[in-house]
Amino acid sequence: MIIRNGSVNDAVNREAYVADIRITDGKIAEIGKDLTVNEGEEVIDATGLNVYPGFVEAHCHLGLDGYGIGFEGADYNEPGDICTPHLRSEDSFNPLDPTVRSAARGGVTSVATGQGSANAIGGTWIAVKTVGNCVDDMIIKTPVAMKCALGENPKRCYREKGNAARMSTASVIRNMLFKAREYLNKKEKAGDDIFKQPAFDFKCEAMIPVLKKEIPLKIHAHQANDILTAIRLAKEFDVDLTIEHVTEGHLIADKLAEYSYPLAVGPSLTHASKFELQNKSWTTPGILAAKGCQVSIVTDSPVIPQEYLPLCAGLAVKAGMDPFEALKAITINPAKQIGISDRVGSIETGKDADIVITDGDPMVSSTAIKKVFINGRAVD
Image 1 (cartoon, rainbow, N blue to C red):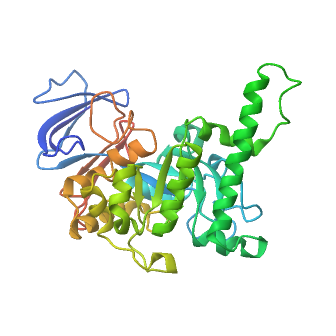
Image 2 (image 1 turned 180 degrees about the vertical axis):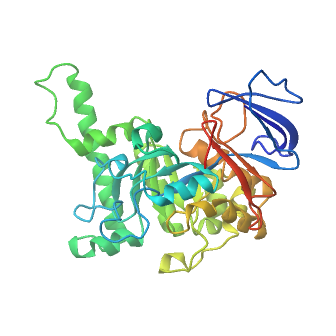
């Protein structure tokens, strides 16, 4: 298949350019001018239309917090234990939830999804494509991160169970990291001697990829002090980190630029429904990007419906964010943050053919999405 003569916004080059894109076996095989059409090859005329990489979300709960939720529709928090690193989000993901299809039709082709923020440590996240009926076939990468949370949510959810302060929540994360580090040291010293191996501990086992820097801690932090606690924990245990929500990031932008951790900013299209959101602003992603931070804009769906991800980027532009930085914040930056940029996030040869064709700027609400391709196949 060839997408012919579209204005390509590849999330690599600042300026768009007119080109053809050849798709072969679900991959972007060739990009160029006036590509020769092979016999039997389908041609899609994109003259006068814009072509973008599939949009990518770095932080949502798609497929775990269902449409029309009640108890049975919500599968993203475990209220029985504040520390659950051994839980895996793919075991709750429902690919047949209608919000997954809505995401794909809205041009959001890849997401990182997983546990909510009730637990100090919630478990591992997955990256998935937004098409399919079996999660195992949709997964791009698992695990992508270990979800943790600071701030009000663990305090509220576990205040009757001995966790009523920010320092209590931080201590739960710190304690688990200490235990897992000691467990790993014992395993490594024991080597192949099964009689010296420590007793199997499911939670500690789940934390080993974090300690080995195979996956980052993915820490929910709104307030500036929570953001800095997340950084303190990562530095104390020498682990990788991504910071999620970053509501007050603009208040400590210089500090965040100094540490250069990936930042997932949002959701911003909501009321300040709790104290730690009182400084929420659409200016945050633009301020952080201007400081040189790697910024992803997120919906935290279903807080904001997943298909409105590009609209959120547009509102950030309206508040002063550079338009190209906003495009990167919903394409290549989140792909980098969740460790899948070798496959998605930009229009480059060799990458998955996840492509969105529009009749204008997708960050503007009046723009219509004409076609969406995931792995080279059209979404209905």
